[in-house]
Length: 100
Image (cartoon, rainbow, N blue to C red):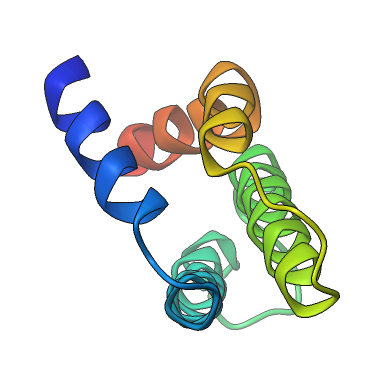
């Protein structure tokens, strides 16, 4: 798994700013769709609030990177990914796996 992560990180690091912005925007959009799976059917409530919170934290992470790109601030993809692997996205993947 570590090898796959390293390969993916290498591919992402080689993207242009425009390509990275497109990827981040697409991922953020897809996350909003997946997060809808936490809604309680037929109501305005949330069925699994911890999972929804994990989706929100991941969304915040992706949009933070996108904001840096759009405002032409430096984006260190490797550092961002290292931080996310240790924190919120780990919670997200665990939470979504538990739903299945």
